[in-house]
Length: 283
Image (tube, rainbow, N blue to C red; front, side, top):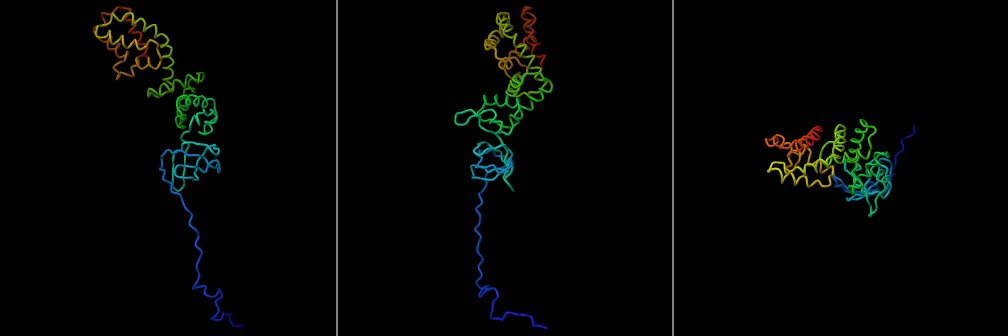
């Protein structure tokens, strides 16, 4: 049986001095950019490269990063993003976009693409309205308006979209929920508002029959409505604004509940009752 082969003790099979002089090459450490944005923060960014429908390279104030984000982006798109997560990956969500770039209005379809919204007639109408009101269009605001509009259309399928959107913006301005039931009330109020100019003129003609304590106050209130605008009519007549001292509805209501009401001419009583019943019926 042959003896087991062994290197002579003076020979190093890995090379002379291997164990003494071995020095591994050091791999250069990749420089990692620090993300200082916080979760929930809104940041402005520019799309540098689209890697996939759910991933893009984005230039942010902190630097250029790869982020997880859904959208229909093109390189060069500029938007505002909301930071959803920074660890283990940067996750962004479309927040808003400009309606004008370099003093030029962006087309409606372009804004719909940037905000990743459905290309329906409803969203086109909403974007058209948003463009008239602000230079920055917020995606969540558009979606909220569309939800209210869709619910109204379910109940009133033949309603005009432009009229629905006017109602929604009107209600939101007054901090009233633009629900479908209130839309029906709104339509009644619009119809009632058509008759208000003649009612107001009649009141102005008969204001001398009012109690002395109300003549000047009431005259000043009515004189603000020479050219009635629905929003101002609503704020001056609505029972929902009792906290406002300059409110025609509350003034008339106090008058009808006072002892002075009995001595008013029948024609003036009729006008007072007509206004109060016309508006209180909506609440």
